[in-house]
Length: 346
Image (cartoon, rainbow, N blue to C red):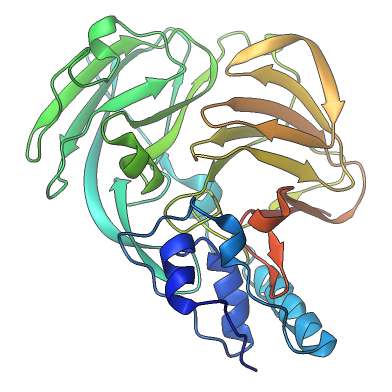
């Protein structure tokens, strides 16, 4: 079946591969995915990337079903999705991390490759995790071809000369050069690291990652059994969760009664309200600080740069849909795409 787009050239220009999951669903129905380019601008007109309605209800239903089946068949096949961690070396009592900035072709799912800038070869970059009070050293090597860069530790209180903003606190890290960041991890909770040089391009193309500081006194946080980070982005690969678009995202798989900590981090250019079906979210921390009065919700609005921590109790068995509730970021006539996953309670 052929799905007629408003204009293929307009679609590529305005949407890039923002509908990566949509493209994957289209592949299942015999529609060729859109090829990405380095000059895509996925934020200019989101309405332009929705295809015209498919021919028949039967065709539409088949495309929706194909995407769901692909998602379920993909469970467990991407261990990096929630498990991409960078272990430090301990040098003289300092936790030392090495990251390199390179350019690669990134597959956000379904084989539609995009031009990406990455830390240590992945989108998002690997998780750096330390404990409150640790001395931290991060050695950054710039292997980008044509651009300088710098790294900002978003949410961390660092010495001014470690803040990572070229021409304000440091010179830019030019291609072939390295820069060493050193600081004490003071701010507990969920932080991020990302480029702060030509950041509209560099961050949306993939120079981003989680920086997590565990508490020494864990009794100050709510109890939880498992810990997941979910990075929202709307740049390289389109609308993505941890660098992938549905149906190539991975669900959170939990046992009945399990308490799940989810760390939301928005590294995109847009607000993303994340909605969870069937299981309420206990919101207990904002930007790393625990709230004096935690509250329950089923949809939490996450603005660019924000981090929210929630606890989800897996009290009811089943597969529960979990997605951005700006619907053009998650579903179209071709089926679900982009910022969609699930919590599977066994």
